[in-house]
Structures are given as structure tokens and as C-alpha cells.
Image 1 (cartoon, rainbow, N blue to C red):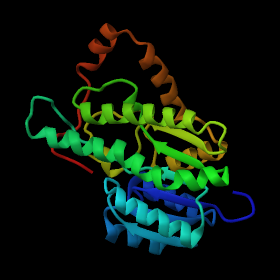
Image 2 (image 1 turned 60 degrees about the vertical axis):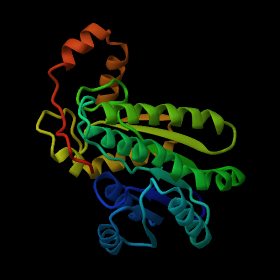
Image 3 (image 1 turned 120 degrees about the horizontal axis):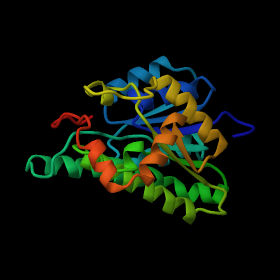
Length: 258
């Protein structure tokens, strides 16, 4: 990113962490490509930011729309320095509920395939430039399966595995893949949670810490650092202990998708 203002393409930019990341990079003078489903909120955010922004109202599950947005951004701003696949949704789910089958499909479509759709149009150009960062926003919830959040946990576990595979595929190309696994962040997604959320961060503070991890080119970063310790403990926790501890864990309400 030396020699010019950073060029950042960001999905899920209209609210929450995405909006905070947009503000973080706008304060650095970045040229931003902002994509989200809610066009009105997206335009309102762009109007509050300094610098140059290109706004793309689109759903990340629409691969053709992502390709068109990427082509427009590259034509008008150049190959991005950083592409952040931040768009994501969360909802409580139960496998036995017939109505939740559609929720499972939607969560996977946005959280996993939406990430693939976001990166796909940029990989060739970034390979040719031999630089850049592809950043996937996963979650600590992808470390172990959380009760009542089967769709969300599984989608974030899939995202982590996908990003790891992509990182190895691009090894030596000059393009770095950064996996970010946040803990709890103050966003509309967590506002409905009626249970304790340890180490809760504001969206602005989370964006600042994630931005630093991206600048470092970290291959894997848990934010905040305290959740990294929790994540490591969860990985090695025996199933019997995990089951006993989490069977009474708080659960996100069903029939809510963000």
C-alpha cells in the first residue's frame, strides 16, 4: 500500500463491523469499494465518510453482481490492496424445525459462498500484481459447534477451513490470506443476545484491532486476544467436558437473520 492511498473493497459494509471498518479505512484516506444489501444505509454511510467511495448495493450470494462490482472497482480505482469478505448473518437454528432448513441454507450461502464470491473476481488481478490481502471475517464460533447455533458455527468453521485452503493455494504468489476470528462485538447481530458476552468489544475498537492484524498480514488472528486463549482451550477441551459446560449455554433467538 505504499505510494498511494490504500484501495479497500469491503462487503457487509452498511452496518456493524463493516461500517466500522469503512470508517477506519476512510480515516486513512483509503479509496473504498463498499458493498452491502441495504442500499439506503450504504449510501448514508458513504455520505458520512471522507475520501473516495464507490457504492455497490448487492447481495454477496449473487456471484454475477460481485463480478460486476469488482470489475467496476478495478476499472475506476485499480486492483485493491485489501479485499475484506465481512458480510455475514446469524440466526438461532434447530435441526428438527422444518422452518429452519431455509435458514441453514441462507446462512451457508452468505457466510461461506458469499466469501468465495467476494474473492473470486479479484484473485487473478492480485496474483498478477503479486501483492494484496484477502481477508475473511470468520468467528470464534467456528472453533466448536455451539448449541442452537448449528448453522452459524458450521458456516464459520467452513469459512476457516476455506481460508486456510486458499492461503496455501496462494502461497508464494505475493497475495496473503488473513483469517480473522472475532469474539463478541457490539453490532445489531449481537443486540438480540440475552446472555453474557465476555470480552465484548465496540465495533470501532474491533475494527481498529482487525485493521492492525490486516496490516501485519497475519495468517490467523483472534480478536480480542483474550478470546484467543478461549479458542485454544475450546480446541483441546474433551467432548465430555465441552458437552457438560455448553449444554446450558445461552442461545440466539430463532427466526432472526441479519
